[in-house]
Amino acid sequence: MKKICIAGGGPAGVVAAIFASENPENKIYIFDKGIILNTLLPTGGGRCNLAYNEYNFKELAKFYPRGEKFLYSVFSVFSTKETIEFFKKIGIDTYVQEDLRIFPVTNSSKDVKEALLKQINKKNINKVFEQIGDITKTDKGFCVKTGKNIYNFDAVVISCGGRGSGQKLAKNLGHNIIDLKPSLCALVTKEKDFVSLAGVSLKNIKAEVFFDNKKVKIPPSMLTGDILFTHTGISGPLVYRISSYCAYLDFCKERPLKIVLNISRKNFDEFDGIFLKDLKENPQKETLNVLSKHIPKNFAAALCEKENIDKIQKAGQLSKIDRQKLSKALTSLAINVISAVKGEEIVTAGGVDLKEINAKTMESKLVSNLYFCGEVLNIDGLTGGFNLQNCWSTGFLAGNSLL
Ligand SMILES: Cc1cc2nc3c(=O)[nH]c(=O)nc-3n(C[C@H](O)[C@H](O)[C@H](O)COP(=O)(O)OP(=O)(O)OC[C@H]3O[C@@H](n4cnc5c(N)ncnc54)[C@H](O)[C@@H]3O)c2cc1C
View 1: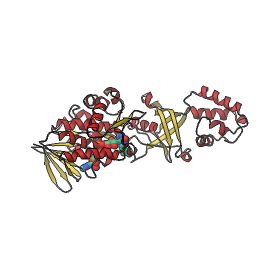
View 2: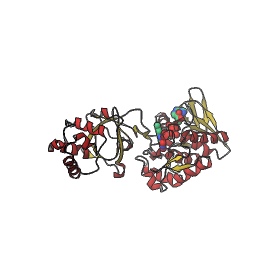
View 3: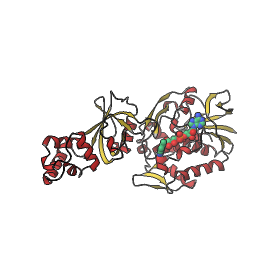
View 4: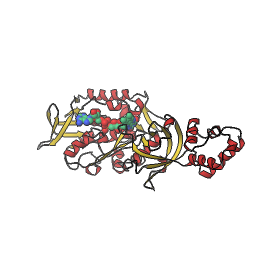
């Protein structure tokens, strides 16, 4: 009989518990300071984007700015196919959305939560609603301390997520922790010109990112997408991806991250030629209305204001300098980013150093019978179901290692 502590009842810990429980001799206790699996509820806007329709494990791993190589081994054992099969087995059928994200057919994260909880209850896994403050190694196993009690276990799985408490437990057990940084988050801009545009989005635009006058290396396929203007800056899928790739750059007011947007997706000469033709063909129209052919009207108005151009002047009267200013804004609009929006990140970059973890078992290389899974590790993906995929895959390996 093995007594196992699962420290953290999020998606990773719960899946580890379910797989470990396949050995009926195991006595499993899930500890959670809050409500088990509640972190699953807001995922995918309440729909739970639980995986991504990529079946080649090396291709799938490319969506993780941190953890890619480590995940080769993990995903070669348990990735998209196994995830879909697992969920089908516990009563959750899935479908693939047009953008390849995978959701439960009911579009309900509550249903995913209930299905997983049903497994826990069926398998007689114990729930302890206490916050773990410390875990120490003993001669026979581990001593787990909560504010209320002290417990002894043969094996421990740390699955406390990305917010820092699991990393602290790991550090006390001798593990190195890679600095925690917000990732997949909105960004605060230096420019306040676009405040009036809060809520306006631009679709399918291209970006380039610079820091200290050097281009930041980001795969080109990740640099096209939608952007949303907010009260403090920019957000949306493209911005989330940029925030992820730039999570470890020390940008600030004095050293901003420069994002150059190509809204028209044409080069300057090409766009300027088209714009000139539009202006010539509509000399009596207001400049704003001609510009609105290419971008949302409120965005066109904000651009005119930013460039000090009278938006109601007749298109035929727009000077060459002003036309070129607008063409430049539509082909290379520079936005300076000074920080991430704190506390609203979807995922945390950083965590338990992967060098100290066995990628085949999720066991610590430093402390035997100590395992890790989920976001507590230095693994984070882009939006698209990748972060939950990390939980299912590493959770499976940890649980399976405890059979
Ligand atoms: C708004 C939002 C939407 C998201 N949408 C998606 C999505 O659609 N698809 C996707 O792939 N990812 C999504 N994510 C990311 C995903 O939810 C996380 O990556 C995932 O929940 C991490 O799972 P985990 O089990 O590692 O940790 P968590 O889900 O954070 O769970 C950790 C658990 O441990 C408990 N705990 C922590 N410390 C202690 C302690 N000391 N003692 C006891 N218990 C403790 C916590 O209460 C919690 O229940 C989203 C995240 C957010 C915030």
